[in-house]
Every structure is written in C-alpha cells, then in structure tokens.
Image (cartoon, rainbow, N blue to C red):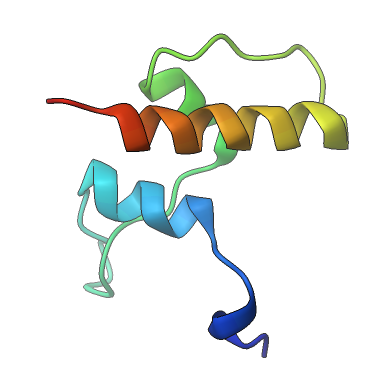
Length: 69
C-alpha cells in the first residue's frame, strides 16, 4: 500500500466534506470525480483525459477550500 505521508487524496477529502456515510459503516462514501464535480456545480469537461481529470481535481480542491457554507 501507498504511504499516506507522501500523497494527498482529494477524493477522500471530498467524501468527508460531503459527509454522506458509507453504507457499509466505514467512514464516508467515496464519490467518482465526475459525480463530485457535478454535485458541487463545477462545469465538467467532456472527456476522460488525464489533463481534464487533473484540472477538475484542482477545481474541486479549490471549491472545498473556498466553501463558506
């Protein structure tokens, strides 16, 4: 397994931010990147290219950081 000291998972952060319990009782439900973007009102690219996924991840991270709700 990868060592959490050397990377950061935006999707795990989003799961905790969104707060939907995991149906199996293991923390929070993980969402697909496109679903997280859509649920956050972020315009989605129309492709599954790595660069688009990276940009969407960055915008989602900024959305979480800037959230005032």
